[in-house]
Length: 396
Image (cartoon, rainbow, N blue to C red; front, side):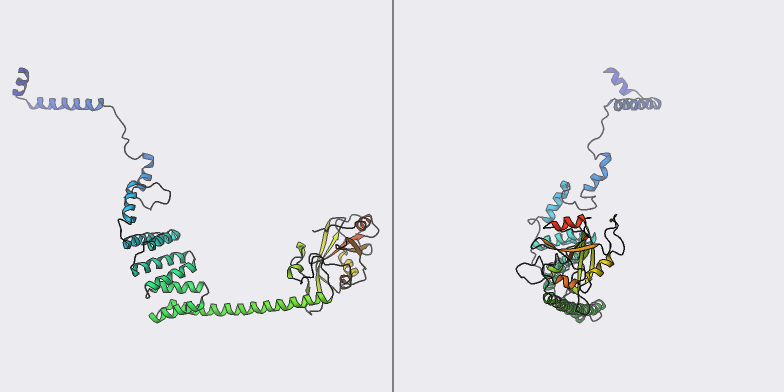
C-alpha cells in the first residue's frame, strides 16, 4: 500500500507515460486475442441474403403470391390493410382498387379481376367508387378478350356514373366484337353527342355499319345456299325413289337421309351420290373389291349411264401390280354383287349399264356406295367366292 501511494505521488516523465500507455495497449490486445472467436450467426446467410431482402416488407419488389412464405411484418401490414375491423367499406374498396391497378400495370389481368371483385364485395355505397371498380374490372376482362363480361361491367359502371366516357367507349367496343350492332350504334352516337370530335367513336360507328352489312349479306348468301341444298337433296331423293334404288341399311321404310347416303368407304366419303349438272343422271361412288388380294379399287364418280364392260375395260388398261399371272385383264373377268339380305351373290351382265344393274331385284346399295367383286373367269378364286353363301365385305 505504501508503494502504491509512492507511485501515485511519483512525478512521471513523458517517456515513462508513453511506455506505460504502450504496455496497456499490449495487454488489451493480448486480452482480445485470448477471447474465443465466434462466428456471428444472427444475421441472414450469405448465400441467401438477396432472397431474405426480397421477403422483407421494406425491400420487397413484388407482392407475395399464394402459397409463398410471408414475412410476419407483411402479415401485420395485410391485416391493417384488409381487416374489415380496421377499415371502413370505402377504405377496403379503395385498397383493393389500388391492388387491381397495380396488377393491371404489370399485365396480370386475371389477378386484377380478383382484386376489383374483392373491392366490390366490400359493399361500399359510394357510386363513384363502384363505378371505378366496375370500369377497371371491365378493362381487365377486355384485355383478356372476355368481351361479354367486359360489356356487362362497363354497363354497370355507367349505371353508377352515366357520364363515364371510358366505360361507354369500352362498352361500344365490346358490342362491336360481340356483333351487337344496334347497341354499338347507340353507344357510339351517345359518345358523339357528348363529344362531336370523338374520331374513335365516329370510326367505330362506320366499321360497325360495314360489319353489319357484311354479316347480313353472308347470312342471306348462306340461307340461299341452304335452300339450294334442300332443293338439290329433294331432287336427288326423288330420282332415287323413281329408279327404285334399294339400300340394305335403310330400315322400316324410313326416309332417305344425308347420313344414309354418306359413303362409308374412306376414299369415297367426300363423293356421295349426286345428280350431274343436268339433274338427270345419277353419279355414284363405287368400290371394286378383289377377294384374291383383299383390297379394292375406287371410282369416286361413276355415271349410271356407263356400261359395266366399258368400265372394266377402262379400269384394266394397265395390269394390276399384284397380278403376277396376268389373270385380271379385259375379257377374262367376271363381276359380282352381293345381296346381304339373303346371303347370296349375283353375276353381273357386263352389257348392262350401272342404272340397269341397280334396278335388279337383288341389288342393294351398301354403305352409301356401290360395291362389286372382281374375279378371274373359271378360276379357283371365283369358285370359292360363289360357293360362299355370305361373303364379308372388304374395306380398303
